[in-house]
Length: 123
Image 1 (cartoon, one colour):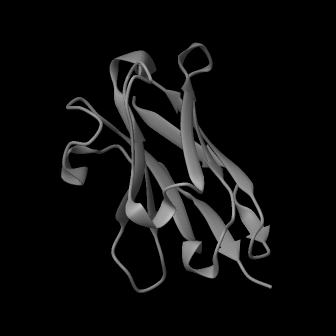
Image 2 (cartoon, one colour; image 1 turned 90 degrees about the vertical axis):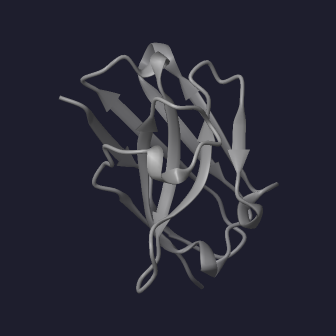
């Protein structure tokens, strides 16, 4: 059974940092592209970043470029999202999901979302 467990969220002041983890089980992580998504209150879920199956490609939406870094450790079945220079507008529940297409494919090709981890950026 495919499962993602996100962790690492919390409350942080503007300008602070967090590192999110996405632990995968039930499938071979190295064969899939992984994406991070977020959903803010009252808004639709949006794709934030993705990483290719062998970490050969990454993608970031403009709003997080230069601040977020996605990485993966296939041996540990884990994908990470390092978030720096956090802003109040980054407040959301963050999820990870998988795609068999490619990193950069339409966000609708990603599925099997985890339960999410809450990130709150506030002073």
